[in-house]
Image 1: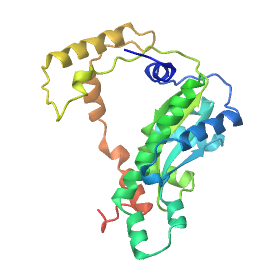
Image 2: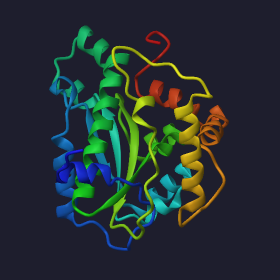
Image 3: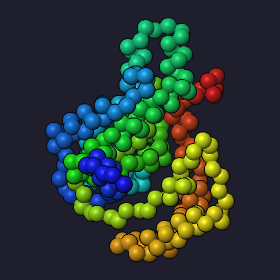
Length: 253
């Protein structure tokens, strides 16, 4: 496979959860936000915003919500927000624009923009020698995050990002073989006894047995089953938060 510095950065990705005490500089933060703003955006509507959370008390609340207090020791913490509020201020107020801004389509567009922006910051940070972890766990209590960050109507928190100077270099987790994720002209169905899936389960078992920290006996099938066994009520507040912010109200659902 051919390579270049961009590919090398992407292929070297790993999640970092232990950071040095060094905070990001204002110049580093500005660089990362510039990279975020140059990410792809649906219809050039720029439907996402970023909040830097620097208040220790607010970081502690995010630690409570996510269950990951190590985020408080990162060099910086971002929350990426789907944002149609700004476009509501930019567009002429009439029945059509108001209805469209509250639509599921525009909610998804904001989520897409915020997600793409997050990945741009991750990649930009890694190119600068930084490490990070994307955190969907801020949605464990979406209404609380909305209140914490004083988010107006037509905004919604999508992802958190703990980023900073790495104090660890964990091993790469082996990804699924490409034949299980890349198909041609249609979806390729598999069964639990598919040889490629069986081999991947064995590879993941070996990975967890051999890695330097948190060694355990686990297959990818067991990992997925554990994730799916989580109480769905843990994130029941997502729908409440969306409706609170002006999306997916009963008339629009």
